[in-house]
Length: 99
Image 1 (cartoon, one colour):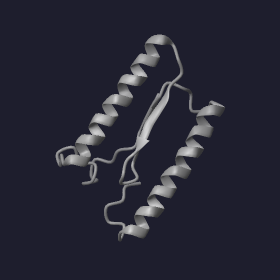
Image 2: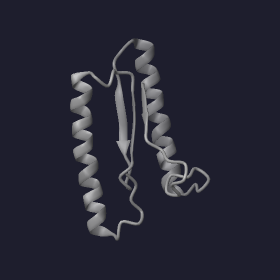
Image 3: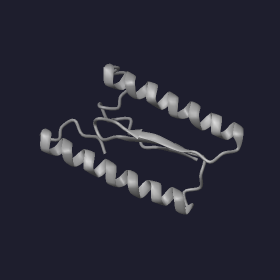
């Protein structure tokens, strides 16, 4: 199972606008994908990802979304993402926020 939240019309996430941040995000996405592939080869459960400086969550998993531990991880990530977005709202007018 892969969880990717991406909207094609969002200029902050447009891969054609490759600035330093988007290249960092691409590298981080690639790293998460490699970790998931390694877990798949070993038959291990995997939940991995990151929350970008703009508040966007990227996550990959090979665990069923109904799994209790997966739900707990998602709840923690929701709280982290909400906190990051709250911080960004305080620091800016919210134009560059994703989420």
